[in-house]
Image (cartoon, rainbow, N blue to C red):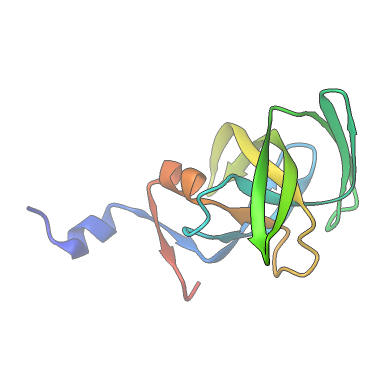
Length: 134
């Protein structure tokens, strides 16, 4: 059995807050959240749903984006309040690797530190450790 130290040396180490590049949006700050078992989340404003597409504006870059809706998710945000969020896919670059068709729900993250929240499912794909001091 290998030691925990050797196990850690074989892993990618992610900072808690790191840059991520999304197609059509560009590079933005993201926060790793291993407690988030839902989809990744992207800060989106002026969300308009037309049939099977969603149009929205990214806040950090103020870019209008139109994407096909591939799913929706109901998020319980506390005090008995639920949010129904559209889910879209982005091809992303993170830590010098490209990942295709990564799912993001769209939500207002204006009161959050970063415009992107990376959830457990994606973090598991990275097979990485999170440095909470980073």
